[in-house]
Amino acid sequence: MTLSEATLDLIERLRGSGKSFCVATIVRTKDATSAKPGAKAVVTNDGELRGFLGGGCVTGAVRKEAQLALTTGQPKLIRIRPKEEIDVPVDLDGIALHKSSCPSGGTIEVFLEPMQAARHLIILGSSPIACALAGISKASGYRTISGTQKRAESVVAAADENLDSFAAAARKAGQEDALVLSTQGRHDREALKAALMSEAGYIGMVASRRKFAALADAFAGNPDLCDRLEDVRAPAGLDISAVEPEEIALSIMAEIVALRRAGQFGKKPEGV
Image (cartoon, rainbow, N blue to C red; front, side):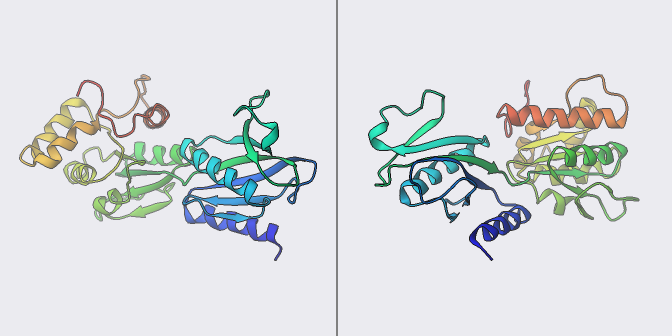
């Protein structure tokens, strides 16, 4: 297996592992350079570079910028050129510049493409809204995990993973993940307790404010869960006058996307 083939194989394996990484590709060179256009390397989430882009003059800049790209989630083009030719951090065409002390004196342009780990959407319940939301979330790039109780009549067919326990599904949620309760009368209290004990950055419940308030009263004696109740958005979703299950699911997905893009994940809803 050539180095190029090994790099492509690594990319596929990392994508399957669910880990974040950055692909660095040389798109242009000028004058003498050891690596040529098309050469690829992978920078892992912990800064390890696998592949070949040239010597240390190149890899240092690539590692640094790849880590930034993974943080922002935005692709970036960088230009590495002899230090004698650089007196500003950004070139006239807006491309970030990095100094090279390599004696070859060549210039390299590298495109950095962050590959973020798939975020999770955990759905508790198997209502029509839950089923519709699973399909929409997969189309939006989320890994969808469904949690139902053993007594539930059905599973969510579109989910990537179906678990027969609310608690087991909720434990899958991290701070960058979303959790939606769509039990709608089937084991609401058990599902809400599991959600409150999760680390999800977004918790939404398909319920009216009045129904949610009634359910919340059951946890009034538990200070930890009581405080977490303030993080729950009920009713879940943006107000788009939704009526059908598919429309309600769309409003919920829109709210999740809007909050994530605005950096509001993990922040309490307005009015709380």
